[in-house]
Length: 620
Image 1 (cartoon, rainbow, N blue to C red):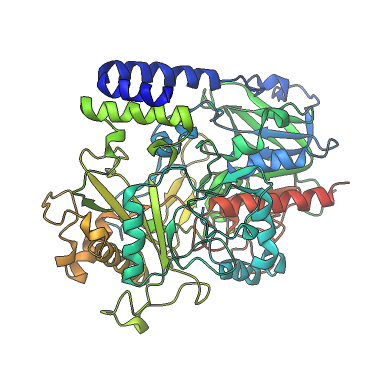
Image 2 (image 1 turned 30 degrees about the vertical axis):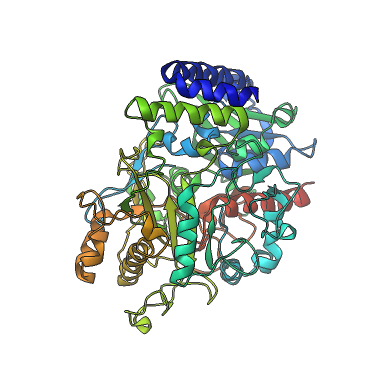
């Protein structure tokens, strides 16, 4: 009762409420900024390179990259007190960043110092635009069965691999979503997953509109039954409404206190060291060189050695870049940059594939969108600080929920959804009849192309091309490790991709004008920045528009793909070992030979859990 009275008083005293809420939020944030035993003095874990011969610090395993997979491996491997691990991360800890911990604010990290701020080459099939590349849906079961065939290892089949999803999950039931079969979710893993306490009002309208249009309701996307259907988005969030990263889940204070784990931050690995002497059948990875990420190569260089293996978890862009800088990649390309070739590996940096999207923006007439989260006047500022107070007091309200409010997975050859098209003319790029090639995501805000929230009431629908046939490359710009690589995803270079994405845009327009979502859509709004006119465009006109506004959904994969021995482009074997060398593995999204028809984060976490089990079983 006291809280209710306080909230009523705050509603009356708006300006004072804003100040009090700001102070309250600041206190909470400062309390959460606990010191962690992370190392930025590199002399504690490595030795400076100099002209003198000297012994270097040595570890059993060196993990490069403290992102999605690296944190998992550092935690799991050091569960064995005999195994000593050095984790080297270019960034700093994200635990103290309020944007990282608040579900609705996560997108604010884009285009900041916490992001690599990469851009692609101008895309000739996508309006010649440069696409910005910053750096919990797992995909259909048949996607993993397809992986198993490609790599020649049944342990990647869904029925075998799904154990690793269950291993990392800690699903917490929500009484508002009773249809989830908890037996299909993990319950004791480190990564909390579930539905937020807040559901945007437009979500049910979207779900019902999809059902009315012919997309069935799916109570759980991530089961053996497949992903086809529509539902609210389940996400990585704990019971208190805090967004969960693998750093927060796996690198807990207890884990960081382990004497056999050292975590170095703000350090970039610039080279993998190989022993190419004749005592080894293949060149062997024996260590890494790194220096300060902040100083961008102007500081001292350090070296650390690995007794057993170096494990690369740098991501789809930087893993192939580092491999090529270290002499593993297409031989002619390395020679162009005067890099000595350790292994001529044509697949390194090739086979790049990414989910492509097109943002469809609509005005809404009920005034329920969350665009006020970027306040523009006194009224919206009050609503914003009110939500901060609600979130800090109870972990609820709009800030506890991702701006992605709902998702639908479907097939572009569904005659119910696309009766106007000849379905025989579109190539089936999926892994099976139960696998989607389109996703449609609902957001509760308008977002501009630069990532800022739109001013005014509106929402967005994002059709996502899940199984593109276009492939691109990552290549070196120079031999300088501090220079960004050349990113060329080659978006929409096949007719299949443009045809399927156009159908996705058609579907977005159709759903927006299907009851009950049509009751929310302000069709009379003629703002040129919105997309209410899409329904009047021909396919040719729509193709041109899609090419000019195509964007990434930030799921690049494939640049160090697993595959059978002897297959051109297969960089890794099914145990994630780099072919042609020893002592070197890769574990990040670059290992996936094809895109999953879902989101990639969970797949990478599961792959890291799998690799940790493999390594611990092999450890002598």
